[in-house]
Length: 340
Image 1 (cartoon, rainbow, N blue to C red):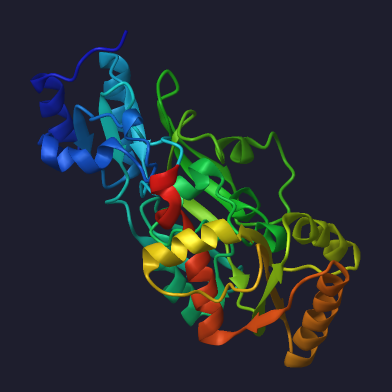
Image 2: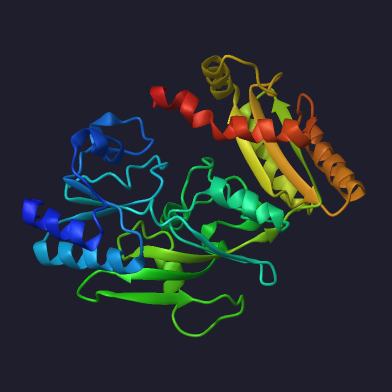
């Protein structure tokens, strides 16, 4: 059985975090849930702490261990699975105040970030250097602590891999009885020494330790990129297209499937039409290339495969239109979550 958080424990937490403690129930309400619509799994924490460095995180974990109080780490709260919900009450350890971009290394294509840094915070800074972080979980307010903790994949996983593939190194606060800060991995791509504890930590949902710093791989921005929107008359033809696209040697950076029922609900919720029309099922196929000519050849080749599988049409989106397409895709859950 866990113990309750009393005033004495709160006082110690205030001392550890320089007063970054929340106890007011109204202010703690946002920390009782993530983006999941299932309100029956929401739980109010007994206290929220907001450390600003790894040392404070470690001290909170040590105190919680000594007092037998549960700790639930929290990133941006954009998940859909309740992973950051404090189901046992206790302490919510929010990493939102650890939000600095510490480095963007343009020679080694990596960035060093604290766990509270969000995708929308890093993206413009990386873009200035001609780089980008390839995983696209779907919510730009997702933070890197949560992205690593859940091994977020997103739509570009096909072309660039998941977060695990993009994680070079981590600084992690391990709870007692270990009770120390450890460093896993390195900035180098080729690193085959020892057990892969780094990749054990990625996707562990905060159960093994709390990430306090990350070194993440960045990729060069593609020279040109387009998205094909391909409507089909039925689900079977759309799904059957995918393996044939890959068998022909094409390597899209993203390949997603959307059904018309979902599109209809989303359009109604947003009160405007999308680029999806003419089908019962759709493929969204993102491609990039080093030149317009290469991009055109790839688009034509993929379109030929789609036509072999009875697609209704093939629409090409680029520039601002392409951004709108993926923005629509990223917000589909917002439209349908009341039905889930």
